[in-house]
Length: 239
Image (cartoon, rainbow, N blue to C red; front, side, top):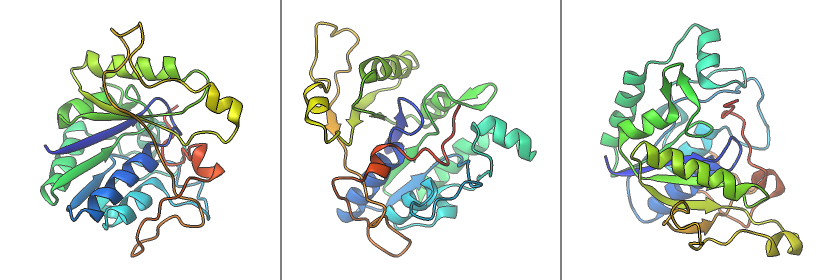
């Protein structure tokens, strides 16, 4: 399967922004992009100034929210719990089949996970298992704040332990505080080269709430709003 699997070091690290940016860039190049997210939770907490994850992905891939995911739940809970409460348990085989069906309709698949790699989609099937079944390189969205080295390395290790290839780490948006900028982690290899990812590290850009795309409108990317930089996290409650 040709494409990328976008995960994060936690909920609200900007996975959807990174995935949507990739969709927008590939679409602008003339690629037929299929966007996929296995499940979206948190519909009970709508935000009038910011689209839900599947809506943003659909707008940037020139698709529809229903084509991005067929599984949405109201409570802002982890996927397995939200599905359990709704009486609609998730079936791993169906999730994989849906992703493959989406991929067949495009040139490239951009799949976004839910929370981090170890979030359960069912009690016996993690987001990482879905990434393994899809067999695509992984891009990790991470915050550029205190603790991100540990969180990022833990995610890299979790990915590599399952045989996943880490294609890169997207960090951002960077804080406006000059002190915070000076304290940001370096992307290069350190003396801990056995654990630090030998993959590109890039800063990401985010859409502002004023320019966030709607169906039928192109994605516009700016230097990022406070709302975007904090990582929206709705629709992605992973516990």
